[in-house]
Structures are given as structure tokens and as C-alpha cells.
Image 1 (tube, rainbow, N blue to C red):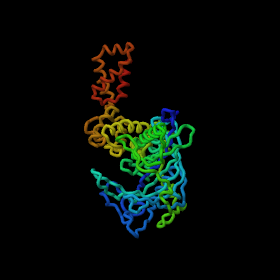
Image 2: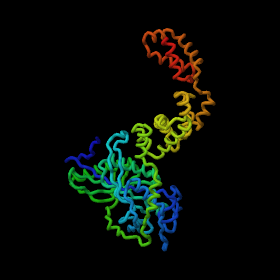
Image 3: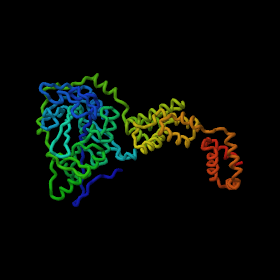
Image 4: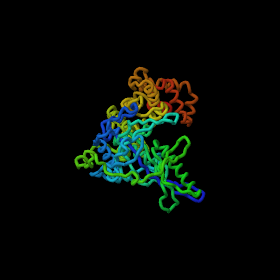
Length: 500
């Protein structure tokens, strides 16, 4: 049972209410209303069309792939898909918005209500889960970026991001703790990556969250909320909830009043600061964009979107548990990110092909090796799974050599270390370094006889009832054979000789 999260004030407890507006950049090569590139990291103002720069007479043309990806995302969240949607102008002036308005969808979004189920303790897949409502997903264009010089006398505008397609995924105010907010964004990012509608790279700004926080005493009406803009990591998001909730509680208990405003988060000073008063919808003078026709979707388009969806993380996790026999924890870790599940399934498929065994027979071995050996090595190297020097096919090659008795588990660890350093295949390393496991019973028995002859006192102790000495004899035999003896055969021959 998850403990209820509250903020303790001098006059009692306060509950926290959280809603999130996640802006996810849609994975397309061109922008929402122009053909300009969306590639990250280009020279400033090198990806700006006449439409992006709002030159007179330039008319927008919707990129239907952006709409398709929004629909696919909505379907992945089990949300209502609206066949009719419309673009509106959100009017405000800012230097990084050449048009003087943003094209968005206030009144008729393309996706309606859905939900996301999150696990509140990711280290315990059997822990409590919670369904968090999604109010809507609408498609809109991003603004440009302001850059300020070191001496605050001049600002520069980069319009490369201007016009990039965003999905704004608006949650319901269903979250009540930093942990729930973090779990929601983590699960949402996972789904977006599975679907392929957003790469989820928060550090590059392609996914960021506006964090709405309010506090109230238990049983009271919702309090006044503040919105902290453009939070670009899950860790920061959780910190914003804690810091802003504490600030509001302290303000209320000091006799002050929380005002509806937009704030920013300073991670260096661990505080939120006021940016401007928070506007309401009527302040933006929304009206339908006269340059854009409504978007009307037919059944064939929706069916294509639905059929293109991959197996989603929750479905995949259940299949790993029920069909492959994996533990709930391993299944949850393997399916948390699409890259991990892809790597695991490639490793498993290659292992099945090499050994002729079933995927259920090999699933646990592959999962354990990936999650312990490979993940441990990548952590030491400081690289991601995508940057792994060992491929799934090379991993399967190594595991198959252990499975058929060519090398022992101990030798496999040594071979793996060499694979990480050289990127060579396991078979080549084993051949070049003569690491094949010895299963010749005659050679093993000869080595055992020499060890027994040299340790008659320990043989007597073993036969006198000290069976723990079997480990000593196994170790001595493996040492004598340079670790290449088949451990199973060593154990069998030792017990046969010692017990007789």
C-alpha cells in the first residue's frame, strides 16, 4: 500500500494536486505547416522557410503525417479519436513567434479523453497501480528560441524550432505526489517511443512538461494552481512538485494568497520563480484559423493508424510473464523502454536459431544475462544500450557456446570482457585463445587422481563426513586444468571417486 503524500505545515497537513501538460515533438522530418527540416542541432536559422518566418502571403499547409502520429498516440492511450478537428489561432506577441500568434487546437482537438496506468513503485511490479486520466491531445506549432549573450544587453532569435509540430498531451489533475507525476511522464515517454511518435529526448527539448501544482487542506475545494514551464527531466519535474507545494503551503500559513501565475524552475538554486501572471483562454482571443480547413478523418485512415501500432509495453510485459515465464520484475524492466525489449527479442531469436531450443526454454537465461552482465558492463563503460559494443547476435553467440558446453560460465565472463574491448565475436576469441572447455573424461580423471594423491589428508576428512571439502577438490581440479574443465563432469567424477 502506497503511503499518501502530504506536505506538513505548522497548522496541519496539505494535499497536493498535480496536472501536467506534456509537449512532445512529433517525429517527422518536416514541420507542421512547412517543408523545413526538423533535424536537431543545425546552425541557427538554417531551417526556416518563408512560412516559418511569417512572410506576407505565405499560407500554411498541414503535414498529415503529424496528424497521423497524434492519432496513433491517442489510440495507444485508449483515447477517443475525433474525426473532426480544427486549428485555432492563439494570439500573443513574443519575439520568437514571427506570426504574432500560435496555431493550436483549443475548441476541437484531434484526440479526446484517455488514460495511462502507472506502477507507483517501479522496483516492485506487484505494487499499487493507478490510472491517470488524459484530458486531450492537440497538435500545435512550436515557437522559436531566444538566446541571450553573457552580458544581458542583447538577445538573439533562432527560428529553427518555429513551426515544429508538437503534441500537447494534457492530463487530468489526478496526480497527488511527485512519485505519481514522475511515473506518469516515464510511462508516457515509454509509450511515445514504442509508437514512434516522439523520441522522448527531454535533454534536447523534444519532450518537456508544464507542471501545474496546487495545495489544499483535506476535504477542501481545489486551491489556486501555478504553472511551472518547460521542465525537461523527470527528476526536475519531481523536484518542482515538492518545491512548489512547499512554497505554497508556507505562503498560505504566513497569511498570503497563492496567485495564478506562470513560473520557472531554477535547478541550481532549487527554487521556482515568478515569470508572469497566468492568462486564461479568453486573454489569447482564440478564433478559428481562416487559412486552414478543418481536418476530417475517414474510417480507412483510422484503420491504417490502428493496424500500424506495435505491441505496447503493457501487452508485451504480460506476454513475457505468461508465455515466456519471466518474473514480473524482469518483464517490467525489459519492456520499460522499446530499445530494451527490441534488444532482448533479438537476443532471444538469435539464441533460438543457434541452439534449436524454444524461446520459453531460453528466455530466462537471455533476460538474466542482458539485465545483469550486459547492463552491468554498460554502466561501467558509461554507455547506453544503443551504444553497446556487443550486438544481440554476438550475445547469442556467447550464450550458445555456454549452452553447448564449448566454454564454461566462468570462461564466458572472460570472453565477454574481451568482446567489450575488441568487439570481436565469441567464437573467434575462444578459438584464438584456446579457451574451449575440456570435456574429455580421461584427461579430467587423470588430473583428479593427481590432486587426490597429493591431498590424502583431505580425502580422509571428506570420507569422514566433511562433505564441504568437495568444493576444495573442484577448485583444485579447475585450477590444474586452467579453468577449462567442464564443471559438471568434474563434479561427477570427483563424487564417484571420493564416495568410493
